[in-house]
Image (cartoon, rainbow, N blue to C red; front, side, top):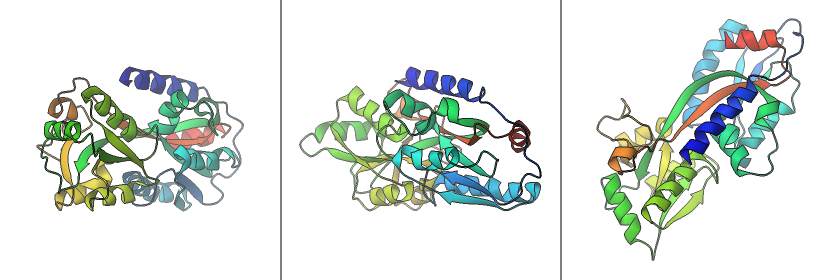
Length: 274
C-alpha cells in the first residue's frame, strides 16, 4: 500500500506540472484572494494557511481570506476552484488524500487532479500522532496492538476524516497486519474527532499533530507513537510507529499543496510561487 501511495503521488505531481496556462489578466490581483480549505477551522491545516495568508496579503496588496469547506473527500473545496474563474483569485489547499489516494481508490471523482489544477507550492508534510483516550489501559503502541487484538468481542473504535483518508488507511494497515478488530468512525472535521477521543466517545485515532499537541500536553490525550519515520521535535520521547509498533517501513504523512485553476495565466502562477 505504501508503494502504491508513493507512485500515485509522483504520478499526480508530474501531471499537475503539465497543466495548461493562458495569457495573464491585467492588474492582478484586482480583489480579495480566497484560499479554500478542505478541513475545518481549527485544524492544523487551517492554522498554517492563516499564517502564510497573513504574509501574502501585504506582498500582494490585497486581503487574503481563508475559507473552510470541509466534506465529500475534499471535493467541495476542490470544486470551489474548478468552478471559479481561472483568474488567480480563488485558490485551494488540498492534500495527498484527494490528490493521490482518492484517484487510486474511487471510480468517480468530481475533479481530476491531473487536469484541473496547477500547483503553486507543496509547502508542508503533516505527520500524525497515534492517540488514545486516557482511560484506556495502554501506554505504548505495542500495548495498544495487544489490547486491540484482545477486544474482538467489543472492538476498539478509531477516528478518521473518512474512507480513503491517510488516517483511515494507516489504521486499516495496522488492523490487517496485527489481526486486530477495530471499528472505523469517520468524521467531517479534525477538531471534533480529536475531542471525541479525549472525551472517550471514540477509543483512538491518528490525529493531526498540529491540532492534537495541546491536548496531549494537557493530559487529555495519550500519545503512543508518531506516523513519521523520525521522532517529532515537539514531542520528544514518542517513537515512530515503525519502531514502537514493530512494523518496519511504516510511514504515513499527509502533504499539503497550494493549487490554482489549471487555466490560470502562467505569470500569475509564477508570481504566487515566487
